[in-house]
Image (cartoon, rainbow, N blue to C red; front, side, top):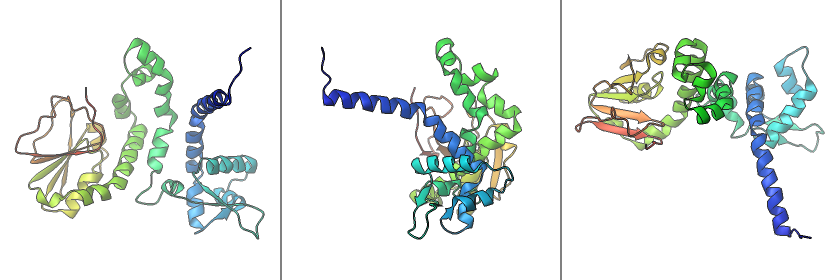
Length: 281
């Protein structure tokens, strides 16, 4: 009869813990989206300090509010360290407070990540993951297996999904721009600066606003450019970066980009700024 050692027993328990942690991880995203839709972070921020569950319930202002469900939600969000739970000696009821995570769920701030949370937890965007097996087994993308079109075609024909994606990318750009602006002297550039895949133009507009001697070109797919606001000193150009890229004196490329693409061969006299992670073959 085999004997299981303490070390082997711990390994079994740790393996089970990792299994269930991954299995239940989707619940965290759903809970985060629920908090966003109920504006819990905004309600707490509006009180300028920790508040009770009853005060959160009053802020949601629903005549049929499920208070027990709200309580369970807050316990999960505290467990996942999305919100903090505060206990005070004179109070039996716990208080809930914003922390460095939940502050990004406040929707009326420059640094909000609420649009990203809304986009990535949208069933429309998450459904293709359930067809990853077909994508791997049969070839083609999971989006194509789910919707019959590629994701960019889906966005180009779905204004709501297109806006959600553009808003999420714009919010991500805003929180990164302070680091970008402090890390590179854009004042040393001259002429035109083109942002390849620049979304609705948040990054290039901030750069041109700070360095008005530059002429900005925001380049992205036509359905993205169609919803881009006007910025002084910035020209929006629609097109496909995998087909051709407009001429400019300097180029900026953000986020993930395949370096092997033959159309990313810029002139030897131009300046190319690579911001973010890049993929090989």
